[in-house]
Image 1: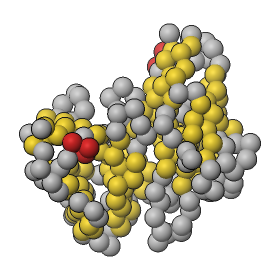
Image 2: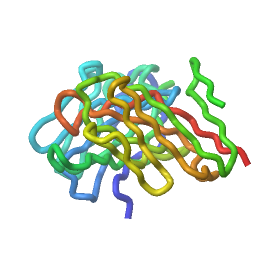
Image 3: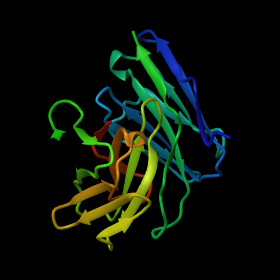
Length: 116
Length: 114
């Protein structure tokens, strides 16, 4: 069974379009994340979300919005897509173990977004 | 050898040799660190973690060393195998929102030569 799954795996779209990437985790984790990985493999957190709060990286444009219908899902909506949005987007999840625990994040397989 | 520049740093090692991947972190207040391995076409995968009250932690064939004085982490892989070829990232927990704000390093590509 896949722990963290994302759909679609590949997404090719034109500038100006609106698209969504779906993410589901079956691990029962409290917190989910979205990361962006650019062509140089640099991995940057975009959002983290649990049932208490949404934490947004201040550098993320407001065209990006996470939506969580329930604890197991965190979808990423992107409006008015731009060329610079082309990247691989990873969803991840982790369990809150408190200050002394382990914060291993389980990553999905990634969605390669190409904006033309 | 290791190369650093505009491209992803690459470390090439001979199969069977030991590998050492280095990482400099930025936040002196960070007290929890993780090493991840990312194989081609996949998401990052947890390897090992360490807290700041430790200098060293060992796993299976891997050892992480932490030097808080110079804000430096290293990952040592013993008897490197072809399956170890991947990009390796260190991650530090952010000062705020503990556990939810990891900052990843730029990554190092490990290439294992036959």
